[in-house]
Picture 1: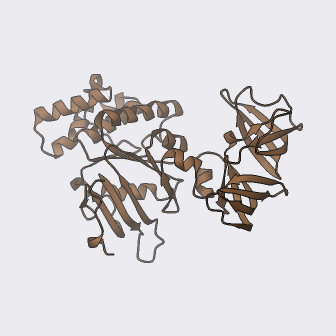
Picture 2 (picture 1 turned 90 degrees about the vertical axis):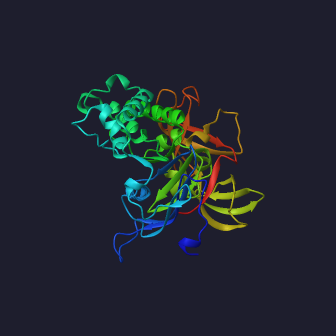
Length: 369
């Protein structure tokens, strides 16, 4: 099917359809067959490590890079060949790119001036947007007189001033400290709720993606490895890369011995048998797999407590982290991380024996790396 005959996603504010990007005819593609949509009022995040193609994808969506193949749609209109200034998208980069010689208000007015909005209306809309981001009182200051977090909010206000169809955010919080990042994460979500704008957000921070997104697209080597809600991807990763990148997990080599009605019997590296959820493990027959077990789905067992799966373990380390305790134990032939509450688990010391347990539904069987 050629580009002209493909169905156009008219309901999506932004849609990428089988988009590729390579810098030269013989070059290795940096983006491979990317397809996703951003619906009205939706917050979609591209999450992945450095070099996975996130920013290149955003630059193509914004119009700063041309796709090698594929189409980009805005409200059903093919904008693949349009330059950035002819797409109704607001863009915020990590460096903010504020004009130092302009006041805060003049920075926010700038995209309206470029659209030839008259002076009175420009000022009204700029001040309204500065009020939404809590900076109306700073309207006549210069960017250098603001903190990093305040400059970020000015950049957001400027990108939103002309009421774009989609707001494109390229790791906008990457230069801020942890506390300021957490504050602005909440403020960006609040601004989105107030304005109803659709958002395409780029980050390599898993917690940030989990907290802010309606949909996460996990990227690896220029492709989308998995997309879905934060809960779905975290609880049902498609492969070992997704399981390890979105949150922490224990990956345990195993062989599937039997699988029936969604439950598999697996043989672990130390020879122990365990039960696991099996979405697509097949009928069995010693198929090599890995069992992904999130640390918080494991628990340290009291002396007479039991579970679907029980394994002897030896405590290696206990680290108190305030609201939780991180245990490193030696079990099932490898090191295993267990996360529990401050009062969970028996009071054992390093080198002492204990038991860990988990339910058959706690783990996810995945193809080997």
